[in-house]
Length: 271
Image (cartoon, rainbow, N blue to C red; front, side, top):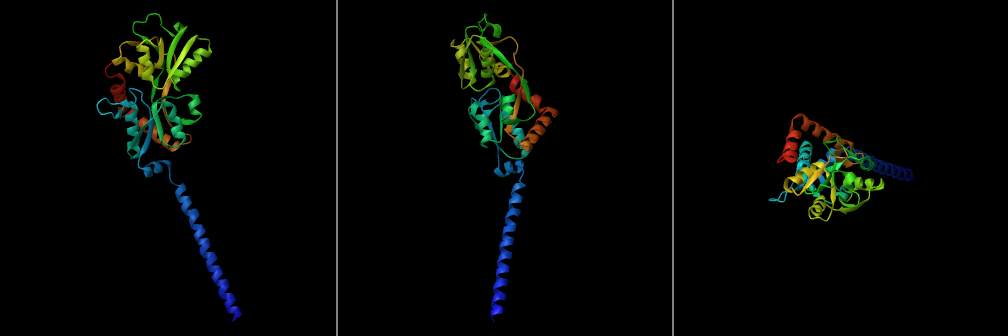
């Protein structure tokens, strides 16, 4: 009888071990299934494409009647969301918070008339450029003394905090330009200060400035763009699958004429 009892205990032990082994074997399988979830599948699972953007007319701004955020960049983002098959969620924030929102996984992509720079490429990945532009010098319409950046000696120049305009102004100063740089959170704030005589000049993106000039004839662009840059759509570092979707969407928009329609609608309309 003892040997029967021992045999039963051994059999029971083996069954328990087999059950545990089977259970342990299922966990990795489940984990493997989770790992196979693609980036686009994750976005679909979340049920939305989250866009981080700013307030920079005509690329993204609030409609005066509906207060809804509209603009060139918003239409591009809508096209990308449609390509993926999910609705677009727009999160408006300060320009300096855009890249951190990607790094902290608070947004899927940034479209905010953002210049592609080597410094930014170190911390985020960019899709193919979707528009070319550059920095220009802006003064009051009656000003005849400032015709180029060479005429800024002793002047107060407005720029946007964390943006290319601030970087360009700092580079000028490092090269010996005798200018006082005044940084603002939003572009419209320093352009208004320029109009009101609190600044001598401002540095701004050409396309944004052309839009501003449509309704603010008291300021003007002087000279040609003194930088050449491309606007890009940013995603979290290593997010290649989303980059591929964005590039595919941009390519289709160029081929079917939608990109030209948007340019005429938002950039050149009313000029």
